[in-house]
Length: 482
Ligand code: BG6
Image (cartoon, rainbow, N blue to C red; front, top):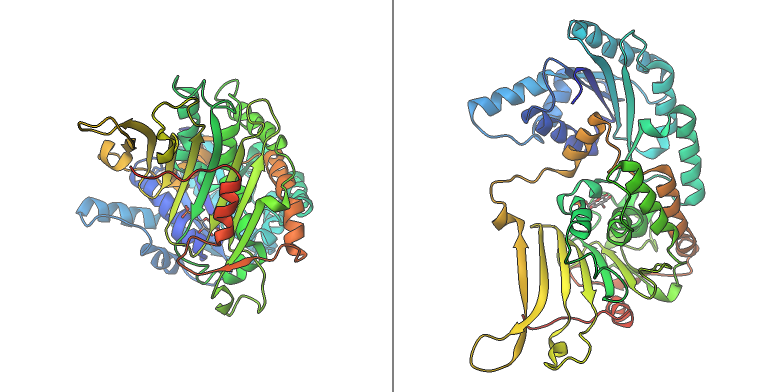
């Protein structure tokens, strides 16, 4: 890490995202020594009028720590680094004051040689991004004689469709260049998502098999066993495709399907992601199943008669040499029977199978992103014993068992550290975002026009049965008996 003064500004400091994700991630980085007391200062900015101590009090309960003296001391030291500035998101005075505070901190620390680094984390709704960014650009850029950088972290939703997303991108591009903008998709900070490229390109097992000759279908699945819980108002405007599939699952899709990048440089990786996104064919309406769980509309913030989907299964088809004919089934749902995110790669049947093992199912390679990170391969083996029969068994690498001593970092922790380091590999580039919206916008417009009403499903179920039928039509074979 570079040394020198680092100011982390959390805008929207009193909101949910800041409390639950941003501050805890900063605290974890601090505890592990990635943020140093003599360099870093953290500023919270929001409309609420309150003191530094009020903010510290509010976030305190979200910072997990041990009971030992050392832990308590590091918590106190961390909280002491936090200052609060109140102002609205379009107030010149507010941002001038913020700049004054940051500059004072930089002056105090000037004896510490190095650069001045300013990181603005927008834990805010996107509707205020343009005005906040304008204010930062006008009043909070580093004007001292110290060299350094200004970086802006933003999080989805980046618009509601291609046109609105492009408009937002253009507004931000007038103020900051692409190297200063960090579009977070927290799935890219998950351990097993970061592992995908390693698995694919560092293992001779997979390199020759990863194509249409061997793979029958791929599923990328996200399930939650709770509903929209207090977020109904936000969710209803977006729906499951914009909330999960167009960003989180599509990012995973890119890493599973893209070609090998020239190197690990962020630009090389992102170039390949863009290419695979551009090779996705228009989504066929008959390869989409939408659902809404019973009770979703009971939330007072959800309009009566809302037809926003809380569940979707969508088949993507890639038009290129590697993947022609292989369905990529993206599935996400709220209020289902379990909480799980996984990639399931199903291989084709063995030709001329003399064991007739097909009845047990096919070879599968499963990467479980959460909970309990794991990857396992389903394979046919001889059933132990006197008989010559076969069963489907597993080669299993469960992280909890294999890496007992390693604490897997939170996605936000890793991504904030990347931002400080200036590594954009795990952030979404503007052209990538555009390509993602190009895939989903026609479908989203159809849904918004009421052309594809959702099928209702029971909370705690697998979702609409029609989704399983679509899976079967796409060629997925349920595996049994391991
Ligand atoms: C967020 C969505 O981006 O991701 C939420 O807005 C969802 O609806 C969450 O619950 C899931 O994240 P994770 O890391 O718990 O899988």
